[in-house]
View 1 (spheres, one colour):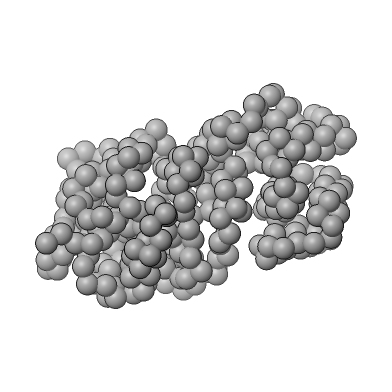
View 2: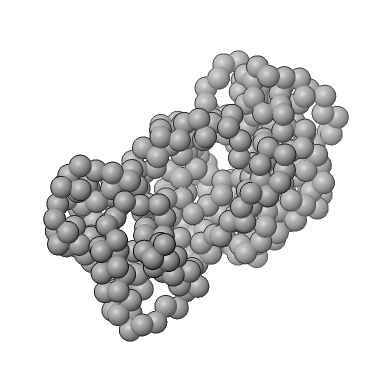
Length: 332
């Protein structure tokens, strides 16, 4: 009998943390699941750790050559026969409730193709570094993909038939394949959900790929966000300079414009992208609450403008928090 859920774990040189990940997967509060480990030619002893696993529900595979993470993910998806597929990183910790809560949601919500949860950040010793906030509102998630990925990849569960329908992960992106896949799902109109539940502990350490390739990751994020925006509006030179300035934190063309022209470009962009003023306010609060190089005078003027256009009301808690944080940064 096939498992109800396949948990895919791509592995590459995470021997230091792999044992803790395996133990957490053994403690899952769910009966019908399998774990597919795909080792991508590790040279630090990770594969030797995997070969010692005795659990009959844990399957071990190894690539003959390092083809990248997308290749490993797609290989495991093809080998899976379960109706649901969950993703797990080999240096993270899976919490016991994660699979059961995800499975139950997708079973009850047939119109959704993907569900995820929240994840706090831990250091190499397992100590919590950061309690992360997540975008839970679907409308805000749809707005946020125009600059970044609201989802924690290591908390996600898909319907396998939908993954196969969109041809799974693209090998075009080495560091942001999850952002690309989620963007494609949302652009095609599939419903996605982030639950207000803790699913995993995400480990941050200096040897991980995302840390060592941060600049390349940001450039890929810009390319995906650019595609997401381009699917909605026509992008001219000025708007493109704004997008680069928001995501890459610098752009000589946008920086050369006067204060008034910068505001006009931002206003044109917001009016083309969003009909509702509450989405315009959220987007502004989002980009200004994150690290940015906008002039304080611009931030103050734009925030006030869209705050008043919303009749001094902020309905979503996340918008309120980001709005407040943006103003806090202006003062301090």
